[in-house]
Length: 140
Image (tube, rainbow, N blue to C red; front, side, top):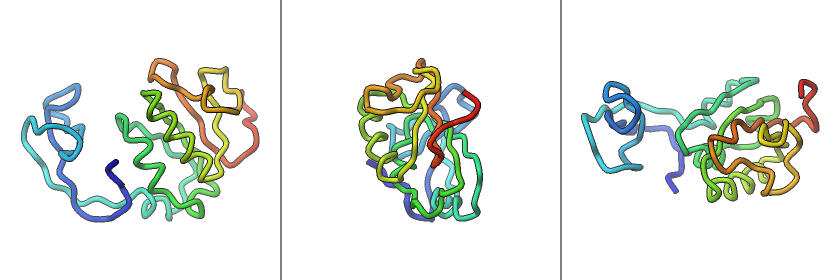
């Protein structure tokens, strides 16, 4: 697993997603296809120190990598919306959600609290997952 915990430099590769003009994957994740762009990056934990209240993650299967790089103290007031695309990622995400002390609410189950790994999404078709420190959501 590519740990996203360090600030530094990454290489983004164009032509690996929906549009050849839109870089969509890091070179460490796929075979190179297309022009590379080097860019400076900050870890998600560094970014979250700024105390965001909501983060929408759309990171094409890298949700577990980002969750594993987050420190609990940086997300006490932060809520997340994300998708989980595979059963393997669901298992890993479940462990990270528990480690962080987050409550998960699954659109798959009409926004009910995730009580076991079986309640988690295993495909993007099962829609979204909401993560929060709160014990319940008042909008479901």
